[in-house]
Image (cartoon, rainbow over all chains, first blue to last red; front, side, top):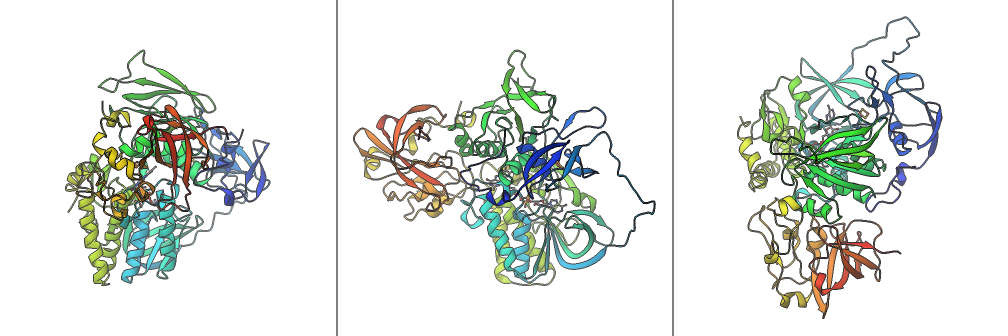
Length: 477
Length: 163
Ligand SMILES: Cc1cc2nc3c(=O)[nH]c(=O)nc-3n(C[C@H](O)[C@H](O)[C@H](O)COP(=O)(O)OP(=O)(O)OC[C@H]3O[C@@H](n4cnc5c(N)ncnc54)[C@H](O)[C@@H]3O)c2cc1C
Ligand code: FES
């Protein structure tokens, strides 16, 4: 049974399904499409278990779908520890499950040659091409600066490339457009500017003394980048929920589910349970319904729905129940998830015996929040503070978004878990200020940065974001 | 229990947002089911006659039915798909415009099952108008359904019947 989405009200996957190929997994033949990741092609064929964990032999499969968790390790044409969510399928490819801790067979005895990576300089390095980094690049370039924009992903847009729904906010910040459309607009604007160089598929993997960033260019070659100024906009990391068997294949975060479904056109399951009723949980439920998936229920531990009312109303009118004061207590299955057991909880969040309910599902999507991705800012020795309302540890910053390290700016979800609109406002502020500190001047743009600071204030002045506005005062230096 | 726990509004909760029958008879008039203060303004920004007002950028949008011309732009742009223009065009029936992002896209003349805010069937209707995505200002299909008057304020989703 195929999990491929054939018809979708908003998306067309035909450009991803141009050339069918045959490949092998554990000696069985499967069909896929050239260019799609191995794990996606196998998932589409209903193969969710890829390998077993080395010690306890627990089933392992696709989890993050973006190359970050290593849950999808397989052996490809004899080479072990390949992430199946990153490696594209090709005609005749031979894939097998990892067995225990696989070793790379080294045929020659001579040590590998190591040479010092190429070193390049740039005026402004921007890490992350989500809404924050992308707009920062545009604005810094318009100020006159030379920008290098790097991103791990293969496309510009960050979270936006998976968001098929229309965004909230103000028209000025693209409200009313679908996330995928905003990503396209930003990409077009970036391509128009000759002073922005873009490296996609290029994660920043390290920071060294002398203000050097190690970038794994095209995921192949380390290049040392020495910038005069840096804007760090890596977004956020998803939290996960703790429950029995939460590691079964078929259980994943909202991000993994959205990559599978909205980027590759493969359903995470036919019948699913969603954990968490924040905006992300509500949106992913709505998107799954659009893909023809039956969403059994959304469970929410709080006594009320976490996300925006309008998002909740959109899923409720489809008949999807939102069970507040409920949590998931267990998943069942061996190779992949088959059942979800939920229960009502008391005021202390303890499951109430006798209230258990069982759902027959083939996927569980967990959307229980995010925290700022401070991997790089911590590595750089920037001062952080734990502020619950902002999502966890966040870098201290000035109103210009410069951190405790001179010349290092932050923007977007790394500064505080919020929205694309605020990520755009912050990107504008960081981009213009970073360029200004290099000596570039442009009164119109500088005014725009001032406006964005005011817009942020206004945006956060309503009841939804007032707590963030208050909490931010603790991290402004 | 309120909409915050339920995820949908009751008629009592939105009674103040339902224009009087005098206006409902004139032309399609938006019923704006946006009860929570969030920073979102496209409906207010797009309204050509300033019939939709907001006190500040986080306020709940309010309609001045006197200024409304029934152009349907607000229903197309609303990111929350929360605006349902309604027209009492003839006795016993109403025309309700529903933002619709599912397949199959209905065709004029289709009979549809009409669902309420909880996704429960409340009756049937006939599609008399379909604004396709490409023509819709907000990239959302807007489907006009003629329904019995009694369910005019209940009709919030549709399902195309055996085509
Ligand atoms: C399901 C969902 C629905 C949402 N809906 C809305 C909505 O309706 N309205 C709204 O305003 N907001 C919404 N948001 C929130 C919004 O998407 C985020 O707030 C916004 O994308 C944050 O922008 P950003 O640029 O900070 O990060 P991101 O968009 O996450 O982009 C970060 C980028 O950095 C890259 N990166 C990270 N680390 C590295 C590294 N070391 N090297 C190179 N690149 C790196 C990543 O690959 C990524 O492309 C939603 C979020 C989700 C998950
Ligand atoms: S690394 Fe492949 S699923 Fe996470």
